[in-house]
Length: 397
Image (cartoon, one colour):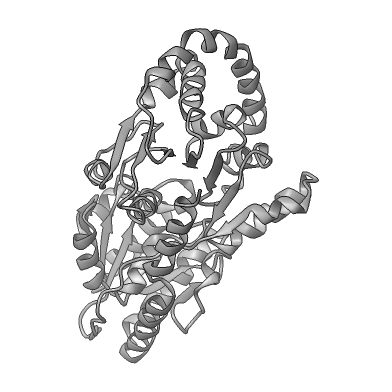
């Protein structure tokens, strides 16, 4: 079922349950202690992931401000839970039980709206949470409502359709790559939406820690790092094929894997590669990237992942498919090596192998691109502007 259809059907059910919710739940919302700041965040989960790392950075940009965070989906792991719950002046709650079941969700939406509407200068911020979008029609229109859209998924079940169905109700729509911005513009045009609503788009790019530059010698076997989550868009099966090629050739190229993508690796790769598991400690991840030479991704679509920013900040050479979102920052043979083919999987594998074989035999090329990648990250991926923009946004009255 298309997400637009699901949204419309659920909205009908929400209208039906509004009156009984008003009678049963409004008194409970009145007795709940109000927030001193009126700042509410609705995120999907606290499990390990690049999106969750951005959510943490947003919260850390306002450490002195009281805030309430609600996690609306089941978290398959708790690797980031301690970090979320440990942010100063933060009250965090996992409410996925109240969101997963249809009947509970219908009443929970109204309960939280009743509570939030009690705050005169409230702000509600949502990311990757369909529960957040369900609340929007019932939140007071004077309240600031902000969406963070991580990427375009190019399918009928994409999160971008929740933003589309709520474009009038959103005060701000935050994106952080130009490819997503272009696709929202195309989507608005396709659905005949007044271009004036494009003025509600805010572009705030995430930043990363930039450590002191470490000179890489590239004298030994190349270390290739693949990290992050799996899923269809990441095409881990192509990483498998690339790694298996070098394993079968008894090449000195060494593959390292970290993150939830490990579950999608073949047994041959698991046996011969270095498996690091899921890493939640940013210091530990930084050390792994610092010791690596190449960061490899074969994604079919996405914006600009944090993994590539972090790897460049540690002098890794990105070898990635030439996606529009990547080309926002990456220039072939300047600060990366791009796999020109995107859709033909055989050619993607062949090009990736050819690129890594070239790097393996050309130390000077490795040093030059590594240096450029680090310099670009230092000049463009600092957290300073990110923190300033979010502080200004979230502390406005």
